[in-house]
Length: 357
Length: 238
Ligand SMILES: Nc1ncnc2c1ncn2[C@@H]1O[C@H](COP(=O)(O)OP(=O)(O)OP(=O)(O)O)[C@@H](O)[C@H]1O
Ligand SMILES: [Mg+2]
Image 1 (tube, each protein chain N blue to C red):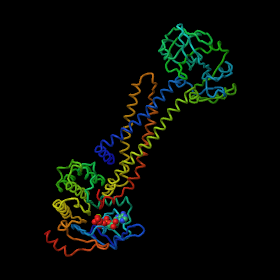
Image 2 (cartoon, chains in turn purple, orange; image 1 turned 90 degrees about the horizontal axis):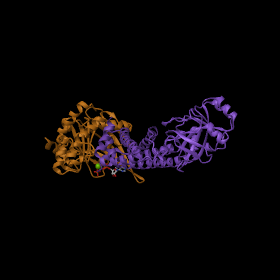
Image 3 (spheres, helix red, strand yellow; image 1 turned 60 degrees about the vertical axis):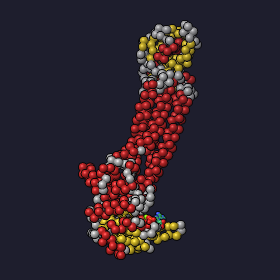
Image 4 (tube, each protein chain N blue to C red; image 1 turned 135 degrees about the vertical axis):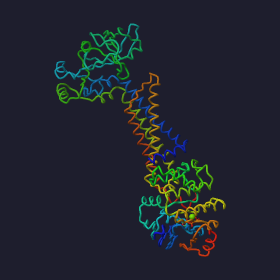
């Protein structure tokens, strides 16, 4: 307790110095959190359809390089149906839809069995019904699409009618359009791109592997195989890592200089009976107080930034990840101050005696 | 030994100066009695501060023993020495060496808290100490708001805060003019007498000597008592 009170009094006295370092900490932390929010936002904007999908693993062609749109599974319909309801076939295809006013929309078709767990819940309108109905990502509302609108697929010439809108359905930054697999099969000679598995189950997985050519891939693998996904996430992650490395050096240097300045003080405190351990603990307590306050403020600031950012900048405030980064930053600053504890250990109580300040 | 809180026995201390080592203290023996203030004088560089640092468990001698309240501290760890300093020794330095970010009352509070005194009796104790050095009206001032003499008074109060048996002062009046110097030395001497402590004061200042009971000179690494001055000194005090 006493160590907190000593460091608190010091901060009260040297307000400007400690405000400065709190600001540095705050800005670094806020930057880390905001980049994390943008990375999550981009990832959601890119692949929300698969991020929100209720599936744990996917069966895809071994030569597809994890890209669902390049995968093609040869398997009989009966073989799938006999294995488990948790196995669902789907076909995925980039497409271009044309409206009556000749407006073109780039979308991704995801052909599924209506009523299966792959079908999203429509927040507006109705679920898939009838052969040529479609449930589309709600972002298409911004393009002027309404329930009941009719569009034509450029490649096959098939006509589809909007029956409902669902939230968070994107693939490779394009809106996903859900259609009936049976109907789609009729247009494409029964092509199946991949099989989805709701919960991992070794028995079912082995059965499928025997029945068809292909490999099982986990959801995260498949998401990172989506075109553009890895590149976006990696560059943002790179920025984050550099920021944290910079934070290590900035904070370590700052604390080091601060404790060098205090070395004389520390010597005097030791001379009047303070123990080295107490002085180190007191310095760590100080750094901890500064860090917790600054990082707390940065979390609040990031949350606010997420609310205030315009909707065309995708931003997702993920508290679990932010707490993870906050813990890393806390560790970084404690580490920085631990390094500077060398100055405290070296501070000699003898300095106080017989020498002018 | 009970009457002598501080006893130094056959102390030797050398410092390395380049490749040769210079012997600063040679077989130095010294003791100081309760209720007595001893002055140590001597030329610059003769080893007065070195002697005081060893007496105050801040510096380890090459050989010899230091008994503080009858306990040999020569072999103690740094941690144990810090404890001895905290509980048994009060220091008054040349510059007051107050902690810049603590208010006057907190300066005393810190040493009390480090020694685990309970909070109830503490504030009273701090007030009484500050009254005894005439500084209670400045109790919530910071060191930078005080004059040199005032800082030194606070440092004296801090030195006595944990009720140590030994008070060590290294040129406590060097940065003060002669009037203040006399006032500060008088204060130290009065508290040492009143609280029955053993005090050592290292000084260059002749004006300090009348307040001291014994005067020692540092010569060739040893402390020699100056008997002639002691007589005049005793008369001037009484
Ligand atoms: N850490 C050290 N390393 C080397 N030499 C030292 C060290 N500390 C003190 N000395 C030397 O020991 C001698 C005695 O120093 P000390 O500080 O005890 O003198 P002093 O009598 O207090 O002098 P002053 O009156 O000027 O304060 C000096 O020659 C000094 O250079
Ligand atoms: Mg000296």
